[in-house]
Image 1: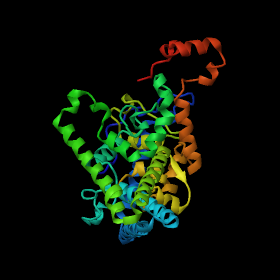
Image 2: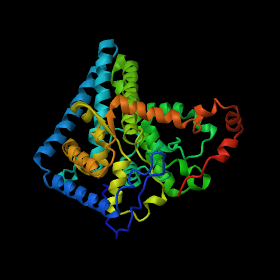
Image 3: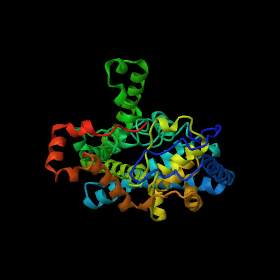
Image 4: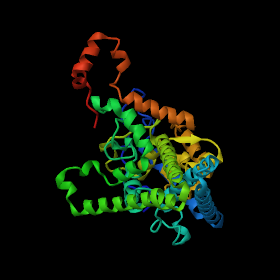
Amino acid sequence: MTTTAPAPRKITSAPRTTPRKTSAGDPTAHLTAEQIEELGRELDTLRDEVMASRGERDAAYIRKVISTQRKLELGSRAILLFSLFPPAWLVGTAGLSIAKILENMEIGHNVMHGQWDWMRDPKIHSTTWEWDHASPAEQWKHAHNELHHTYTNVIGKDNDLGYGIMRVDEDQKWIPLYLGQPLWNFVNACFFEYGIAAYDLELGKNLSKRRRNRPEFRARASQVLKKIRGQMLKDYVVHPLLSGPSALTTLTANFTANIVRNLWTHSVIMCGHFPEGVETFERRSIEGETRGEWYLRQMLGSANISGSKAMHLMTGNLSHQIEHHLFPDLPSNRYAEVAPKVRELFDRYGLRYVTGSLPQQVGSAWKKVFKLSLPNGFFDKVTNPVSLFKMVTGQDSAEQPKRAA
């Protein structure tokens, strides 16, 4: 299932979709409701132009990527049959890591968005694709396409924003539990596919006995466990056994490739919505959201990564996260083409286009993780004995202002 902007509604005299209040002010305050709807119309026109131009060049692109990925995976697994020898282990593990990243990012993620459904190829279609990942495609499409892309950066609605386990905004009340969020964010990164499976299952809100025992949840949980068993059987039983004397080293190679893939995908996804400069939104602020306002929220709630063509490929073109959130069902090879036009719209409407190199964006996201693990103004308070006493005794938390609706 794909995600597009909502149908238009009658506009009001001022935009309703606004980011949470910050010391920097509202970045949309200078825009009228009519300007926001005009922005939406311009983005609709841009999308329609590209969608109308899809053709054989695009189809050849995705088929080539799929063919290359499969050959790379097959070749890497063949080399790992001899992984008892260190050079074979290194080459095979590196190749398998890249193959897994390509399959998840540029192929699986984008195919399941429906970006290639127009080809009418049943083998490359969002309704039939199952990826090399712990989360079943059906559940991922619901959690990602329907929820994340609909409620992008809406606190309490978008699970991709902090994965439901982190403090992601200064207005969220701080509790001592958040001191550990840098650690569990790293653990989540290492085993990211299982974290995704857990929040695609919406495990957090289904932990109560009453919810756990619901037939629909039990069926979905069974589906996840079946998928995980299949993945583990493939990587940690079948392929190692096929390696004979190299069974143990093949197992470690497969485990390493999965960790590398998880760390990479986690980093790319964090860069998309968590760096400094990306806005978050309140639930009530998106009620009755218009088409233009939906587009505006995607623009303000996403960030890009600058880099080479190879880097864009390895990120699944999620380095063009802004363009992807504006046009989720646009073929991924077209994002680089529309990016300059989208950036021109940012400039013309006085909006900030958040982008940076991969190290810069990863560093910015992790800085935010550490910063929000501590109480607001922590370093100012630790130099003030009275403030430090209030913070330690919990009095400071009680004085934190409530989030605006």
